[in-house]
Length: 278
Ligand code: PAF
Image (cartoon, rainbow, N blue to C red):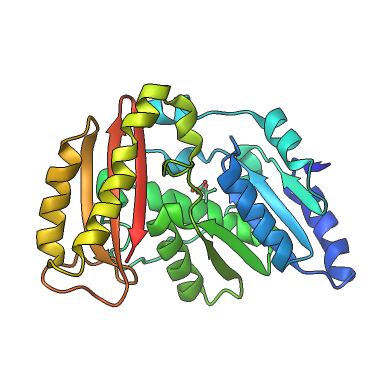
């Protein structure tokens, strides 16, 4: 397995890939890999010749020091999981490789997309995500980058970043992987007990409930009914919003062609997010 820890060593390896005329896919991760990540890797391998998987827990996208401290880190296990694939390059850099002293990153105007939903509850989170993805793109220079739809707002913001920068990287959103009972796969699930995993199913059940309401109710009515439904469970709701998938603006009276319901909630100590597009 090819594991690179410095930007220069990865760039040299990728130069050879390009000289052979091969395309490069990119799956950025923060490690603690699960089947959701592996399905991104599989899709990347179907669509490109060589795939870079980065493993870097990005400190600047955490607005809560405890959350960062609790974030699982298991590089050896991650490398082991990826060793079942061919044509993978693992990039596991230190912070100084991603944020060098001469970091030329310039803040991008996201026109408020970073201030709503997750952005409201995790101030600065998307600035950190955009910064790290921008710096990673500069190192990897992929043809295509693969992101999970579970982080719906992240996908919308990365698409916006690419449009604003006029970048040629194609963003490929990939469907959320779920457990058989419907829990969206997430590295954070490692911190849930079995009882908490059971309780967390209320998130998926609420999303399905909204889907069933959509033909009969306005978004506002559906949102209120869904909050009542959700609150019958044991989780602590942070937000439940129905938004337009492109603008992220909240829908109240009418459904737009692409509406998404986003939920964030605390299950014990663990903050979970999920969404469903209608
Ligand atoms: O989705 C994630 O795991 C992270 O936000 C990302 C895209 C790897 C940036 O740190």
